[in-house]
Length: 488
Image 1 (cartoon, rainbow, N blue to C red):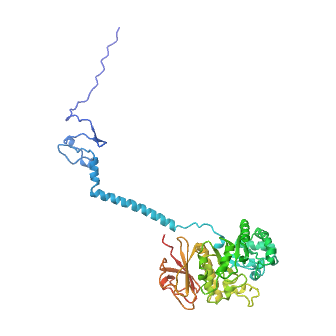
Image 2 (cartoon, rainbow, N blue to C red):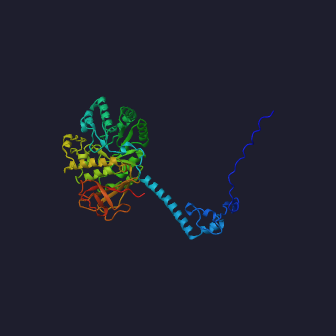
Image 3 (tube, rainbow, N blue to C red):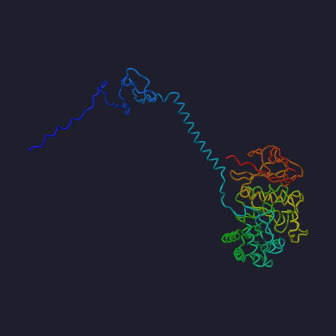
């Protein structure tokens, strides 16, 4: 038995077939030209829906050929186009811009490096300030008195001599060292066997005391002193000095040597004994042209000379003519090497006549009455010392820079302190009793203008900016001038 016959499924409907307009476009053609695959779009009928509007990227050109065919440029065409004048100018311009920009960046980097603040390598502490000789008895009476006056006038590093246990107890010494440390000061001990004798290391002193020196160095440095001072080094053998220096440095201290010679030849002999790199304190010549006498020593960067006016046994600066004492004090602070001041040099202290080896006690009451900036000779020296001390402590060039003499007019002296691409310092001196110009023309290699930083005669009337070729120095005047850094 059969079920009902289902009607056939409906036939799918088809939309109206629209007639094609025009021939079927051929597929895109691929053309190989000069090794490049270039796609060639098919031609279109110019009447095909009126074409694409130009604003949407269509072609504005018509004609029987339809849209243009983009086939690229051949090698020969590219070379011909590259040789035309516009493209040559464009390439030259781009080349100039590239190299100009590159050189500009290199120059800017070099200028930044040259003018950037430098990280100065560490150097010996004695390069940054002055050494100040302060024998306990005349300076403060005893160790407690020294502790009460640990504010050297114009100096930053006291050099303590003649430390005698009779002047106080070891507790007094410890208190002194503690106060010095709190103020950033270092205390050195004079272990010269006979500091007042004509030959400190002669005869019995050498035989009896020289073998005891290594033990004394170890003992005193172990108590907190920072170094040892030994005078009259020219009387010693180089091997012995080298042994004591190695011992001192091994214990964390510094060995400072002194020479009693007052002439350049004697200083050279002392330098041969002290050795290279060793700090030696020499007596600065007192002649009319002291710089000329030691110019070779000043120009040698391997020589470390500290300068003093006179010996540890006398106040020579105060005994000089009052007109020349200020510019000699200025020299001590401005020359290479640390300045070495006897206590009282900053106020022109003198010793009693007779030369019996008695040092004048420090006149603390008088110093308290001195008005800085006053017209007295003591006030002039005190103000100058403090001003030069501040300047040297702030300027690495004055602490570690080189020395170069500068040619100047008759009766005057000049030298330049410089280091790297930093501000330079020109020191000028008039040693005569008459006003004199240091220069008639600007010295070669120096700028025409300078800034007055310090003068032995006090501040000058404004302006402080000076023309070097028009500057006049007053009688016996010394001045420190600041110059612009050299051009990198």
